[in-house]
Image 1 (cartoon, rainbow, N blue to C red):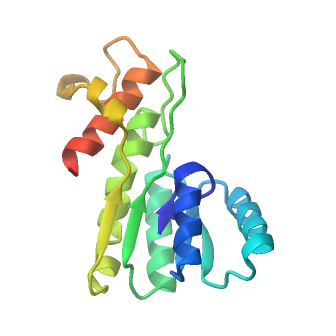
Image 2 (cartoon, one colour):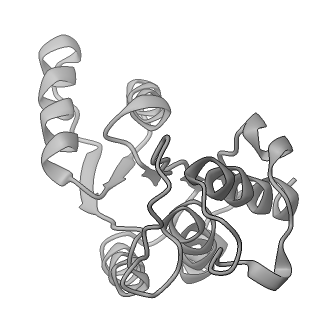
Length: 175
């Protein structure tokens, strides 16, 4: 499973894994983008029968749970989970909140990937040598632990600060 596989690092990771012969689930918020990407790859590389697209919206804990249930019903095991998906709303001072009432960077970049990993532990345990990867960013060095205001509701909001904090939580939780 590669989250955020419809663009950027996630797309290239998924493509290379597919070309190496792996069975890959492209887990994306916008499945039409992933399907279009697969069509493009098929024109270049031929059939990719080992590619699967599944919807995953990290802005919703319910959607994470639904993805995990769907995945475990379709696939007996999970060898590698690459938590790559992320969000960064550059240059805005507008705080975005998810339906679960968390600041969006925090939920998408940290909380939901942790929940997803937890929900897929059974599938990971079915693999002989399972691996879980979390994609972080060097921007984490500019973040801070703010346990008194984890959800950034009391201090002045900055999208950069929110992104840096979310990446710090990831980098420090899963070194």
